[in-house]
Image (cartoon, rainbow, N blue to C red; front, side):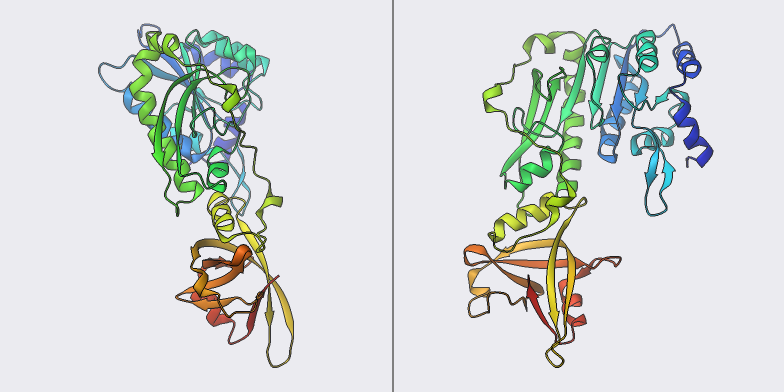
Length: 364
């Protein structure tokens, strides 16, 4: 189902007082299943929602998805057309009632909290919701709020755990289920699942994988969450071992080739998707001497052998084995396999090199 622009505007009205008051009465009062509310926004959270939908439809299910809370519609894609969040759209595509999708600007809005109280959910689940939950919210579900966090807590608390782990060159990561408290990602841990990190995987792919694993972990642990045993067995986090994963800023996207190649490779993987990584290069015409400065978006890289740069000038970018070879700090080298010019499509290093038509390429 495609959501029209008028339907998008309806999503904005879901949090109006009258609409919210009505939605709890639309539920079947005779149901004995526990009411669960899911909060999530980006595409990766859709895997969690799918798992909850599928589990709730099983004959022996203990719960129903009573409502979905997500970010308000926003302008996306090149046309900046106002669209529902990916989670909202996915819910609609699966036939979830539109009047049970709520899009408060803030989770602390009094009208929204009033409706959530009237709904009387037993449990709330969050997965990349993108909004701070105030104490008033956390006090409503008697079984608490459980968050799926894509790191091995207490490591990488914060907004960008996957990106920061890749940037640090982490060899292992994982996903944690934890009760939500007011302090950031600091609640008791219900369970976690570890996994090794491939040295070529990029942040969007790793994030999707971790949320898929987190969905499976959640479904396995839901019975113990509902019967209260998960709360009893949950392990307090050791705050002395905590590390932070602050939000990525676009200003961090530029590459500095005086750093070691492995540092740059990890940054390319970590910032893939958004904001990406960029490098400034000079294109020099050997006949006229004309010098043009380009800003390349670096898409895919790998670290290559020191032998590939021996004998080259320190600023020369060469082409070898299908890759642009950038000399880096500590006599290391970075192979760039794919690049993108502003406003253009992603191309292979070979296609870009051929387009230079013999001109020199130097790093800045």
